[in-house]
Every structure is written in C-alpha cells, then in structure tokens.
Length: 312
Image (tube, rainbow, N blue to C red; front, top):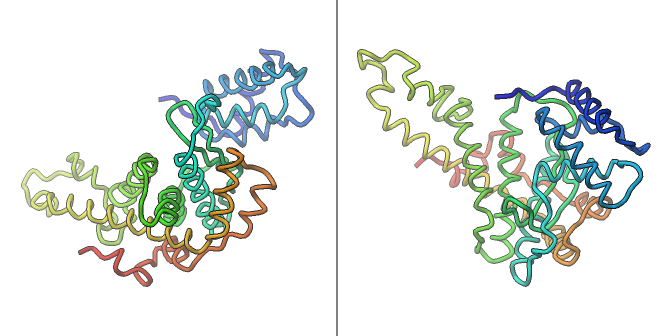
C-alpha cells in the first residue's frame, strides 16, 4: 500500500508534474492551496489531478490553467465526472435535491458546533460517473489529520444520514433507496467506533478484531471472550444498530429544526441543478443546531434520547 504524502510532499509532487508539463498557471493558482485541498491523495492521484486540470483548461481553449480548473479536477477525483447528458427528471429530481439539501443543512449544523470542521461549498444533482445521483462537496481539511475524535466521528455520522432524514421529513416517513451508500458508510463508522476503536461505553475499550483473530492467548478456554464470544458479537451488533439509529434520530431533529432552509435549498437546487458560493452560504448561515445534536455529538444522548439509545 502506497502511503499518501503530507502537505509538503504533495506540494513538491504537484510542482514536479506541473513543471514536467510546462503548464502556464494563472495568477490565482497557489500550489500550496491545491496541496491543502488534496489531503489523502497519493502521488499517482496528484499526477492525474494535474492532467485533469490541464484537460479542463484545454477544452475551454484557455491560455493558462486557472484555480477553478484545479478545483473541478479535485471534485472529479473525489466524486466522479458529471454526466450532463443523464439528467434527473420529475419526482426523482425533487427527491435527490431534497436529499442533498439535507446533507447540507445537517453538515452545516455540525460545522457550527465543532470548530475546525470544513463547510459545505457546493451542492449538485447532476449524476456522476460511479453511480452518484447527487453531490454535496465538503472540502478536505486544510491540515493533515491523523486522528479523529469521537465527537467528530459522531458529527460525520449525523451528516451522512442528513439526506435520508430530509427524505423522511419531507415525504412523511418515506425514504428512497438513494440513501443506500449513506447507510453503508454510517454503519461502517458505527461498527469501527464500537468494535475497533473502543469508543462505546457498553462494549468497553476493547478491539473485537483482536479478540476474534486470536490476538490474545486463550488456549485454556478460560478467557471470558472465549467462552461467550457469541454474546459479545450480539452486543456489538446491538450497539452498532443503536448508534446508527440514534444518529438518524438526531439528523431528523436537525432537519425538522430548519424547515425553511431545507425546502428553500431543495427547491433552488431542483431548479438550478447546482448551487455554490455566496448563493449557497446566504441560506446555510441561517441553519440552527438543536440541543439533540449537541447532546449526541458530546456523547450524552442518553440524557435526551433514552428510547433510541437503550440497549434492550
């Protein structure tokens, strides 16, 4: 597995590939800024990024490669290429627009609550290669991160489920299959929190994979996890389900607390198919974070949502 370079390394790699291609850059291009946008990119990813930015500029017969070309190349790397000939129609277009607006509303509420979190920059309902019908662009953090704290993990889970929550609220409890990947990602996060990171009070600070893989000697069969591993697996499954359900309940609370922003952004996105910049921020600055979100992110949801977080 190739290790991704840090910000300094990414900047150096970008300079090498830009020099190799002898790309003329516009004055608004700062290579250090591009390096900050590409956290997690490998050397090959960065080479492809430079190629893509050059192609985008060339298609518009530009004399220089501009910052917007690099930004669009980053978006393509993260979410795929816009399929402008495969536009959504009718009710599907309305559903996907509200779904993406839900991500934006909940993601903004989380960013308001947790300092240092990136802000929503763009919404789109133009289908992309790879199967995504919509796209909510949250840029990578501008600094390299190697750790994720539990409040950030919980905030990400709620944001991921914001689209599903918006569908349930707007369509009276009905949700589409469009949230499939969101549910998969949220469940994966919850499982890792409970079974790998030791961040669940009920299961405790243990790594289930270590126990399951024989990482601790139990040749005598005397260890409690050796005698009762089935119970531990059931406990983990229950806690994972509880955590995901709680995150969805909190996402629903955030969506219900911001009906005007949700429907306003959803309707605008349905009409324009893409919303970004000041036009988007003017609405998102109206987002409020309900108490349920604060309690959940801080890990105190049992005080507020006892029915959703019980382990029965």
